[in-house]
Every structure is written in structure tokens, then in C-alpha cells.
Length: 219
Image (tube, rainbow, N blue to C red; front, side):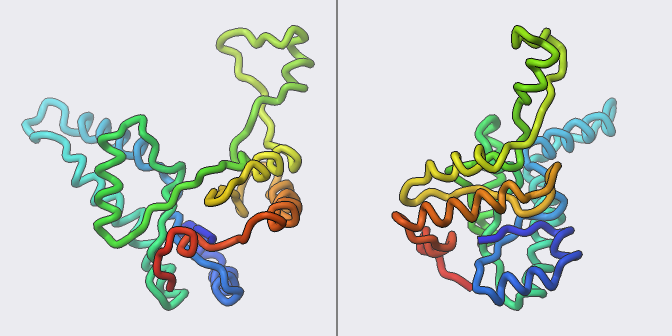
């Protein structure tokens, strides 16, 4: 199942239709890849700054969620539906909906589910989009391996072998998160790791779409 974001849909309509024609399931990854919790926090701070010293009532989280949904989910979803010719029912929120702010996360989920969209999260993160500490670079500068407080640690993207190792942890029912666009250094480590993982995992598992895995109606 591919989750595609708004700008990439606009720039690559041919690729999106090719995915559909190849039999892959497609969901939306939203618009500008904003994360819900941090964006709502910034929205609240900006509102308070704008209305400081005014009798403007209280900031409304519900209104902010509805506003963000319109621009970051509804609009790119409708664009995708126009291209594909069928309703989009799956949405993977950028960064997921974590529980650092459970009340807000629940409010966001309730709003999205009320729009007949199924929210999809992963159970295994391959780590292909998240930089990790570059231990070799750290050792070259700090031989004892201790980085002074306040010093920014050198980072690197994960290797093909590291991505593969995460994927091979899969068990029955797992959803593996991978990325096929963006990132420093390109996505070839992901592509190569995926090729190897498919060969190994198909010995014990069948690969299915999100809808098939969770018994949801497909397009």
C-alpha cells in the first residue's frame, strides 16, 4: 500500500496512475507533510500572540483541527480521488499520531474517522527516513566516544543492511514502514533492502494490502 503526499501527486500523476494500474493500493499521506500535534501547538501559540491583550475568548482546538483537516487532508485526498477515479479511504498521518498529547491525538482521530477515513499506523519502522548517530565520525572527533553536552552529534542515514535487519523482524500481521521518496542520499538503500526482504519474508508470509490485512473494503 502506497501513501502519497499532495505535492508529489501534483508532480507525478503518471506515477500515481501507474501504481493503481499495477494493482497497488493507494492512500493519502496528506498535503505538506505537517505533523498534527506540533502544528496545532504552533497554531495555538500564534493565536495567543495575535490576540494578546484582547478579549477574544479562548483558542478552539476543535476549530483548528477542522481547519487543518481541510487543507492538509481533504484537499489532497480529493486531488487523489480525481486522478484515480475512486474514493480514498486510507490516511497515514505524517509522523503518526503519538500519545505525548493523548487528548489532542484523540480529538484529531475522532475528527478524521468522522470523515470516513481509516487512520493507518505502522508496527515496524525500517528507520530508512530517520538519521542515526554516525559513530565513526563521533569516534574520529571524540576518541573516548563521549560527546560534550551541547555539541551536535554527527548523523548519517541508515545503511541497506540496517534497514533490512529491521524489516526481517516482521511477524504475522505487522505493517512495515518504508519510504520511496525524499531523504538525504536517495532511496537506493531502501530499494535494495526491500528486494532482499521480500525474498526472505515470502518464505513464511503472504504480502497483502492494508485493506486486506484489516478486512476493510477496497476501492
